[in-house]
Length: 412
Ligand SMILES: Cc1cc2nc3c(=O)[nH]c(=O)nc-3n(C[C@H](O)[C@H](O)[C@H](O)COP(=O)(O)OP(=O)(O)OC[C@H]3O[C@@H](n4cnc5c(N)ncnc54)[C@H](O)[C@@H]3O)c2cc1C
Image (cartoon, rainbow, N blue to C red):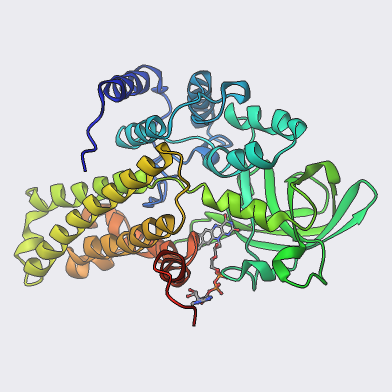
C-alpha cells in the first residue's frame, strides 16, 4: 500500500512542523531525571499531566503555555467539532499531527480526556454534560482518569463490585478502583459502578458515572511500580455522593457506554515512533566509539540479528497503524483489528526493551544511570515493559478477541 502524503496532507504536515518550531515554549525543557517509558504518553523527559502540576514553576508554566498554544488551534482534541474546542480534523490529519509531535519529541496533552472520554461524551453525553466538560478538556484545563479496573475485576471487568445506590438526586458510591493511570493527577474520573447487583447478566447491572475527584469520600493513593515510579493509583470511594446528572447514558446500561470508550483506540502511531526513536538511539550508540565494543563481544552476532528483526517489526507496526487510520478515515470502527495492533505493539515493546538490554551483556544489569551504557535506559525500559502486555487488555484477552471475532473460531 502507498502511504505517501497527498499534497494537502503534505501541506498540513508542514504546518504542524512550523507550529511546533514556533510555538513550543523554549523554557519547557525535558526533565533529565524523569523515568522513561515507551508509552506514547511519555515523551522523553516530559509528562504533561505531571508537569502541569509540577512544583517547578518553569515546568508548570511551560506545560500550561504548550497546552494553550495547542488549544488555540483545537489540537488538544483535534477531531472534535470546533464548538467544543476541537479542530474538526480528519483521522488522517490527526495521525499526522500525532506523528509529527512524537517525532519532534514534544508532549501530547490530555490524552485520556481527549481521546477516550471526549468521543464517548460526544456519543452518549447530554448537551449539558458536553458543554460542561468538553471545552475544559480541549483547553487542557481539566484532566481525566479511567476508573474501570478493580481488585478482582480486570479482564473480567463485568464482575466489578464498586456499588452505587440511588438516593434522590445522587448516587452513593462505595468501593475501590485500582491501576488507574495518572489517577493522582486527575481532576475528574470516569468510573463504572454496579447499580443492579441482581441483574441476570453481570454486565447489565453497570452504570457509567463522571466523578469530580475532589468530592468528599474520594481517596486517591499513588501506587509505585517495579522501577519506583508511580504511573498509576488506587482509588477508594466511601459514601461518595455523585449527582444523577453525572451519569453517562442510562442506568444499568453503562457497559455499552464503556465499550464505546474502549473502541476509541488510537491508531498506534505514537508507540511506533517511540520504538523507532529508541531503536535508532541504540543503533547510534552501538556504532559510536563508546559503544561499538559491545557488538564485538560473543553475544554480538545474535544481538545484530535481533536488532534487524526489531527494525522490521517496527515497520510492520507502522503499517498496522496506517491501516487502522485508513479504516477510520473511511468511517469504519476498527474491531478485532485494534486487538491485532495492541497485541503486536505490546509484545514488540517487550522484545525491543530486552534486545536493548541484551546488547550490553552484563552491563545491561546496571540500574544506576551514571556510567551505564545509554544511561541504563534499556534496563529501565525492560522493567517498565512488563506492564505492556497488561495495561490495554492482556495478550491472552487480545488473542481471544482475534480468534473468536476476527477468525470466527469456536469458543472453548
Ligand atoms: C500500567 C498499567 C496501567 C493501567 N491503567 C489502567 C487505567 O487507567 N484504568 C483502568 O481501569 N485499568 C488500568 N489498568 C488495569 C488493566 O486494565 C488490567 O491490569 C488488565 O485488564 C488485566 O486485569 P488484571 O490485572 O485484573 O489481571 P487478570 O484479569 O486477573 O489476569 C491475570 C492473568 O489471567 C489471564 N486471563 C484472565 N482471563 C482470561 C481469559 N478469559 N482467557 C485467558 N487468559 C485469561 C490474563 O491474561 C492474565 O495473564 C492498568 C494496568 C497497568 C499494568
